[in-house]
Image 1 (cartoon, rainbow, N blue to C red):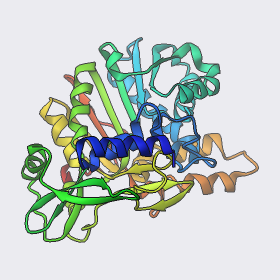
Image 2: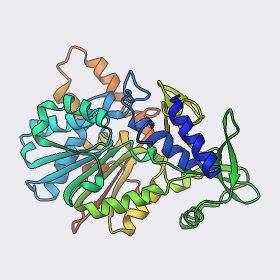
Image 3: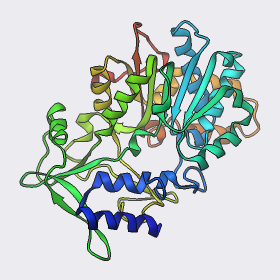
Image 4: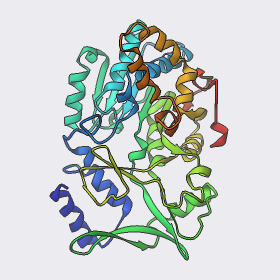
Length: 373
């Protein structure tokens, strides 16, 4: 583990006393000097710590290109449609979306904006996306963007937001992180914010004895930022998570926190600090409600596999792959985007809309589970 980051966390605990797990997770992932997402190390792909859908097959990006194409048509084909992606990784999804738009001869109507604060990652993106550079801008902060119309897109972004961990014992406690001189350890303390209990009340959550779980309050702050920037258009969120009912089900009494290090899964966030990713599933019900409170309309919600099939991925397979010699190999990769037990089941797609229209999107024509959130 990066000793500098470990020492930084230890010193904070010595100065302030035990810190909330949310504070620990924020430092482990986002410390500007040593955090996981601030480092130059390879994070995604074969030589990184995990895969995302954009690394499985380029048709994932093509399908999102098709979705954005449909949104552009719904909004009457504006010539300044902005596609804003936060957390673009190496830039593969951007590349594939741009390739689709170029293939359809409509790319001139779009401007793709990548939000990336890590200059090492941004430099890698610029190399990969060199052929499309005239259509792409970069910003180190979402707050620096002017108001825009178009689409805000995120793939596995919200699961990396720092979360509070709570436990129900004789009463409701929050998990804090302490240091005993040799190892980090957890202790239970009073809730650090009234908003944690308000969250449980807002979503009618009752926790049984010895139940441990997470609360992601930062999604609400993020949605407030989105609302200030998105004048008219769509919000596409692709991530792994559940509805409130499923997230806080009785059998999920250990929470959803997971760590990824060199494609190895663990539940110990205190190993490989700064060198491993730490994630928690998201509560899609909170994303739906908090956005609707701001005036967004919930257009659709379903599993990623169902969404891609509804959107017409079979047509793309016939168009782009049928003549390839390694057709069966390509199909095997695509199945990892679609089938039960793969990203097609674990990952969900939620699309929300801000504006005067009442859009209907093809991707939810087979199944739309928005009313289950």
